[in-house]
Image (cartoon, rainbow, N blue to C red; front, side, top):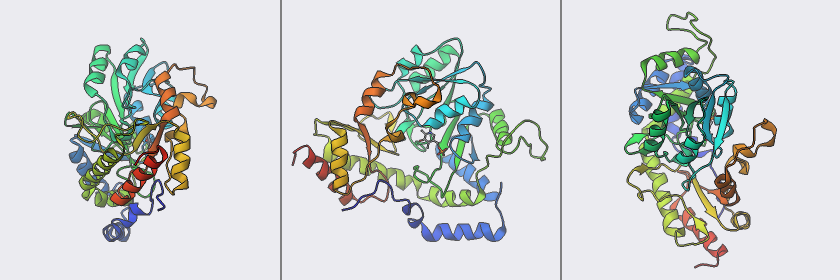
Length: 369
Ligand SMILES: *Cc1c(COP(=O)(O)O)cnc(C)c1O
């Protein structure tokens, strides 16, 4: 068997007819920028997540940058985030002139609330939790810390559309929450795309201007802004994808349950929490990030048997990048985790038989039936 890490062709092939029809409708009308499909997508995805507003943007990095900008985060401010995140989270802070403060993650690989509290200084302005791998942080604890210290929460929910903590969706807890629509993300378009959720009227108005050259609805420039609009063509594609999104989430959870059944007895591996193991969490498994003893040999063994895996961020959490001029951060749990973690294939092109095969290859490596 040959199992790639991700099948990019599936993003289109899965809904070929419907997507083509909706694209042709948009292109025949010449409806390319800030048109009806974008409005509809924003309304539908906001309703899906239980947010008051969604604002479509060019990618899931501009969203973070502009959310911080709308929050007034700038020079002299500190923003706390996990080192186990994509560089985009830190870059959004950096390009606003503020300082990213990197902290450790907990056993579920998400930002450790105790580490957040320990990193707070008089300059701290915001916490940016990454809702990693399709799981939502313990937002009760993070919100308690934020309100005790008067901090904003801006979620990097790039990987977590539809993931919930106590019934509430990732991206809807704080000042604003960011979703990436990159092709390999849970809801992927055919290039770059992103969106922000917010529940606040004034923030919504500001973000719509920030993504469109600072212009108001009359086209007058009322602030500095940039061009970071989600293409209407992409919105049309995403409307099609949103139709099957609930089944997509359930399929990922079913695949995670198959991995649990196939691997949970191996002492050499630590798996993500199983889909229904904690009633507070509804995880949507953007990724299936495991920990494994003799990781590099296991990955080589999987590759020899046709199974492609990756380590997130090319194996480098943010604090380990040498060329960014960051100060030294003490994040021992993250350092330990990156000796052991990697991602097994997790996407809706996978069949049950493929997951069974992957489990079999892993069991053989550890000498188990
Ligand atoms: C994908 C991702 C981003 C950035 O999204 P883009 O749309 O690629 O800009 C940010 N943060 C995390 C955690 C991500 O996984």
